[in-house]
Image (cartoon, rainbow, N blue to C red; front, side):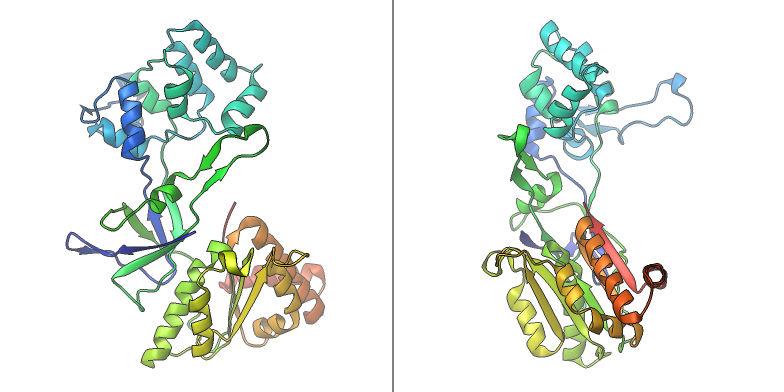
Length: 379
């Protein structure tokens, strides 16, 4: 996990954002990979080309990417060179192979009979266009425009901002897990890499990234007396670090100080291994910006403990904060964790609110509709 700070001021313009907004990062395959693929296709990175739909395509047809542009821009910013290739692209590559053995292999993968092979070799193992061109089918020379049409497109990635402009409006912070993990099982020996996370993880001082801001659902309640309950294990802590910066800044400057309870449930494997922002959280507790900090170390003891277990333990207190004091409940992190936390919360409502499962479920849906239960989850 990396803590990344980007300057909000570039070339005279300033990036503005609200606490815990999303920062949208435009992916970059990198100059190295783009150069290898361009060389493999006998193209120069500086070559400029334009794409126009055929007249027969009709008025609604669009080029697969904005042109004119250079080969470098097409391969770095628009085409996903590492995404598992589609069967349509496999057929195009097969038709473009001079070697019959390579062509047969690709055709087999795209066929109905090769369905399991496609799943194992392409989907499970994550083989993309770059790997096929560079390592698997050296005789393949696909037509450039058709290849761009069928290749998966790079989509931007969204990261919840882990800072507040009220604390420092000259920078924007991200808390990023750099995905670079050995694959297991039948795919052992290969490495799964995140395109955007590795791109961000490789940033050094002086380097830049193409980003823009998207509004998120994470906003502190306007009622300063309303309790704030935050559940964010791992990098899910990002928006809550931003919340705490905003709360602490308000306390320091004496404007609109929050008086309601502020609780954080944070989870990680071990205290000395991946307890993110430990010193900051301790300082927020000492300053009073954070009134309760509940930590779940999942691997520090014989029995695994997760944030949902802590939520279940505090069920009675949480019910009182939600029902009697109009508390707001925020969850950020993995989809499975979010589902388990909501289930633990529903159990608390049943047990301490004297409700049936159906009524407790309805209560949770009402909280969501009111903006008092906000989740940002990913798989």
